[in-house]
Length: 316
Image 1 (tube, rainbow, N blue to C red):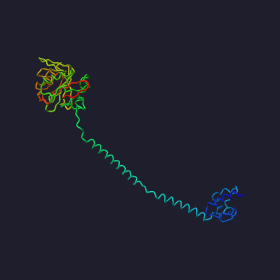
Image 2: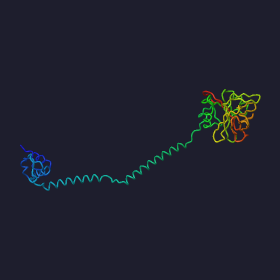
Image 3: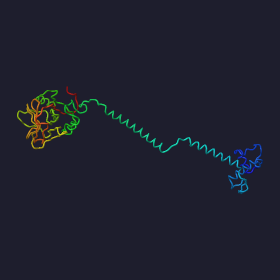
Image 4: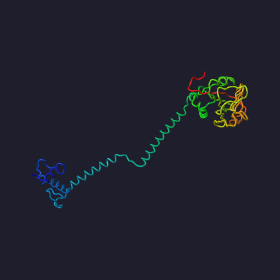
């Protein structure tokens, strides 16, 4: 039976080149050859503290490893190092300048994409919007000469709660119904609710007041209305409202040839029978100043608006 040392030597003789002996020779013959000795010495060099017989070995009893074995192993290690070197050399050189350059290029591309998106957004905003009628945006039955979205919001905040949210109905307009105070009074009877009188002068001022509809002409000068009556104007840079001060009850006066709002001093607003001219001045009823650009003015247009629930087709 072979010893443990013989078995190990026999196994390694098939793995290491320097132990290539005749495969038909016995393990004892291999041990007696030069290659066997080299192999045994190599094993003793690798495991110096353990003998093949199970006992500790003396470091002086084995011969040194032949130089050809050592040279082979060194050459093998050097060949592996060359392969590693070649692998590292295949990678492209990388330095801080390259990384900085990549960052700058990436930021530049991102900036270009952002600028391009901003240009598209600006072009979209610059495209003309379709001409949409104001009455489709506001709750109006007809277009108005005076009512803008801003002025509409102003009125909605000032109107009595009883008419807020209702549909605006154009009861009278000089552009559609002619120039006549009598026609205005007659058409005011179409709705029983507060009516908003809106007029404008030739210089661009928009002003007027809230009345009670239907208007009821009196044979003599007699004031009517309630403390819900107010007057307004736009000549002060933004819509301005004047409510009753409580100084008197001169809310409005309706005659067959005159329509006036306020009193005590001047009329806040007074329209003649032909609806071509008017006057305005400070009055005690509302504590207002002149509503127009001048105390006497020419009228651009006159509109009377009523309010009703729900909606209906526009006036013809």
